[in-house]
Length: 452
Image 1 (cartoon, helix red, strand yellow):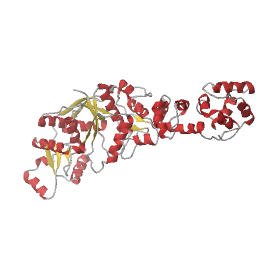
Image 2 (cartoon, rainbow, N blue to C red; image 1 turned 30 degrees about the horizontal axis):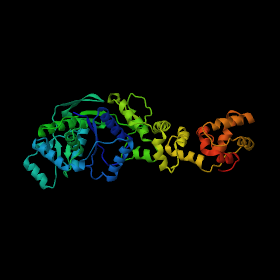
Image 3 (cartoon, rainbow, N blue to C red; image 1 turned 30 degrees about the vertical axis):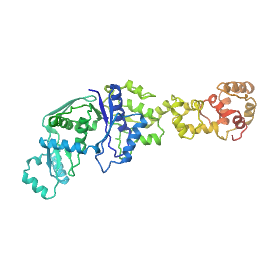
Image 4 (cartoon, helix red, strand yellow; image 1 turned 120 degrees about the horizontal axis):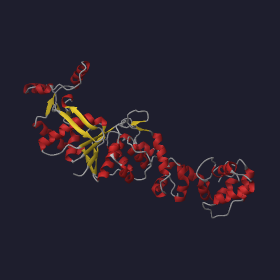
């Protein structure tokens, strides 16, 4: 069977780096195996699911290059969930419960106070037809729980290794709410079975869910005669640099903010997230194909990985220093630098940590600059030695050699006054690259102390 994975976010907020890490790992796993990647929107939480968040999910994945082979939306599948629920009811695995939230909270509190796990006591299974009729006549509507088998649940996790749960230690999960809407625990299993998902790769916060869902997979197989239990992998959850968890609701380290406000390159984020929590060194990669070739889920450790924005920014700079002009031409144009060319990009990229910073150096090479002409006599001598155009990458060396021979200056005493006069700054890209872009007319005026 061909490998099939899914990324199944709920469109209830902005994707953060922890969400996208799971999407990336799933995508890399599928591509490495020659399988397919499903994007499924788990949008049955109608109060919190928003179209703008769904659009944001697709925008973030597209920006990262995580193309999907199939697409599904849970809100299109309510009829299918009803069919499955009916089959589980008929088999006796789904039963109605009438406790109110307040009554359930009291039961849990009582069990906890006795030092016992808050497992549902299955009181609803002891109700007779008359009891249920009476409760419904009082206006109560049932929620529906899945009856777990009190047998061991075991699987071999691709990250955690052998996992074991005792069925008797698990609480019968609610699969359908009082208003008839199915919950994630049911819909996720139905979708994974129907869409032939072979591997479920998700966060370790779902480990207990998996123990329950394996039994639901098996119940569906028994009641409908189809579907197989997928292979599971549970990754440690990403935290921020301080060890705090990430949250869509709080907008923690959202992909949108990294792209739009921080100016992060997609391959910088992908290069970092693909390696966090693995045994591989974090190095800049320019294509997703490189990450696919290096990917092995066996390298993922169980230690909690931390996401450090400063590390991302450093990696972003390293990637920019490698990117050819063709890869950034669109970004430069979006900054208003339509006339920027490969010579400009290659001149400034060693000094950038974000593409947006190129605007500053475009201004230095193409707009008026107030020079720091703090040694006018020396600068006048240097200006008199400016060679005629055309200029190229050898011009700077030829010119400064002549200035050194004429004035006897060398090192910082030679180069710093020239840099400050030509750029208005103490530091920046190599002047052998900038000088041809500045041109003779501007250079001559700036050396004379004029804004040009």
